[in-house]
Image (cartoon, rainbow, N blue to C red):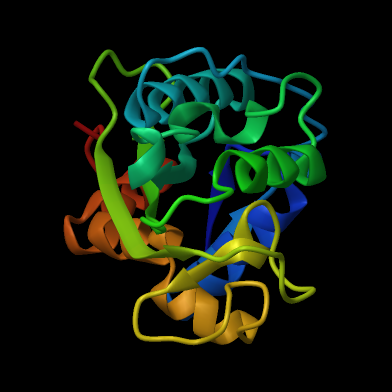
Length: 211
């Protein structure tokens, strides 16, 4: 029977990806809505890790269950790493994928260096634990194209072409993206480090606190 774990996100697109990536490893990802939990956490950290830790801790405390969170974004070399941790709010509040994409393409007009990378940090937390949650990071490198292509994915996917491919993340099949994405790489790093096993152990009382 799959081990249930709470994902500290209300983003439907992220939930779909997390479920697809973790399902083969025997984990069933619960959404906050599955528990009747309504919680928004301000992502005001200076780093992806800080935001991921904050979200994981907040959702674990609110639900009384072990939880994991991810914080991710796009870093463009020619823009000095922007939009970075403000990727979701690049064009301001409220968050708007289309506005963010339009601003990025405007900033990249006439720029020859199109290198970029997606970064993701996964953080895990146990309710009532004073330990710092375990974290793991993943990335995928590629380039920014001049105009959106494809109807899949979300966020900056329509303009990001991963190294070794000709298609954008929005054009690639979901199973391909989920195999090579920054989120998949971060989750694999967390799995390899045993973080999810410890989180699952905490959920059923057989494991140790995540540290």
